[in-house]
Image 1 (spheres, one colour):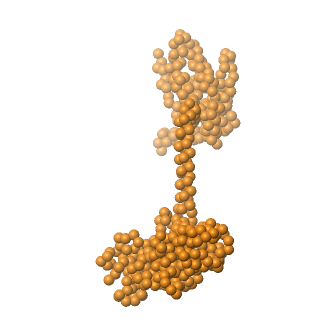
Image 2 (cartoon, helix red, strand yellow):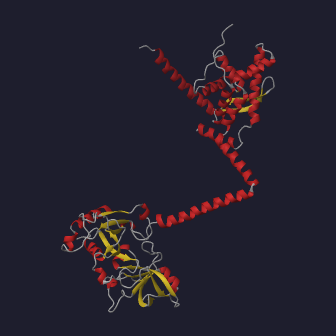
Image 3 (tube, each protein chain N blue to C red):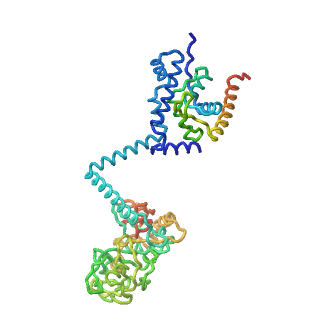
Length: 114
Length: 385
């Protein structure tokens, strides 16, 4: 039996980035699909609590970075779909750049022996 | 900007404009259902699947709690609920509500009234031009709370000082021995309609009026030397008077009075002028201004500390500079006024105690007092041998 992957903490400040990127990649999604996608790309390491994910979506919506709209799923169930707004896309580009920069810095710091 | 937007939303959410609870619950329910379906697909039986989903996802009650807190501003919501509850409670108990309202009304009213007084008495500027130049000059006996100067001290100081443009004196009671004002600071006058009136008097010399910078509304003020002129016979100061605007209106209906006479304590006094409305000295609410007219017998006595003294500093002279000058004057006052036998204020220590001079500004308390000088100089003196 393969050992179940340990649940990882969401790194402070990265949840917004992950949600925005997911919506940008996949188009409008409901909360469960976002969580499933993050679990999938992390090989099961990243399991979002509802109490983490939905307040984050609400915050993004209040800040005008995503917009939520009720729609129906393939199985004909009511679901709230989230899509990034123009401001959300700008924010994503900015945060992605900042993240890449930070990763480069940390990597240099940890692995450069010179 | 986006943070500002977030708070706008939360404020709106506070007033029930955000997403309703059912809306949020439905979203969470879908999440749980989809998670349970996923668990079933992995081979769990339906009951287990739902339970597993709930455990893995942390429960919707907790999520709802988070969402509600984030939707609005919780403490504001609490406040709104408390206020609504209080309103309902007050409506149920009208008597108590009326009592509470009355208490509030009286409390606010009393505060307003007190502020009106404080504002008028303490905070309003003095009713004289350039009030910050006005200083009270006081004399102190060690251990005694006496503010007054004797006539020789006053006259000497007035003549010696270079810091002050004007130094003047006043007295409230009949302490000057001229028969004006008895000891109560009041005199009897006969009003225009022959009514007897008891009014508050302040005895002043022309120097004081110059120091205060007063201009009469009608007529003129006391002229040089006038306030010390002696009547040919008997007691009594010069029979001249200036009326306050308020007395002029109340007792004489504001009719022309300058140059006419008014009975003051049974003697006819000529009315020289009328003061502008609100003019006063040291909050005495002066109604009639009479000549200081210190009796010659009293004017000679260094021990008769009867005069309140107010000075107006020259332009550009600070109270501190005036203090320095006063210190210097006290150092050789005795030499200036002549001889060992003269009792003069001094800086020297004597058997009686501390005779050092000091001069300072009034504290905030006193400096704002309407009609009071904005500072004071202390001319500490005692009885010397």
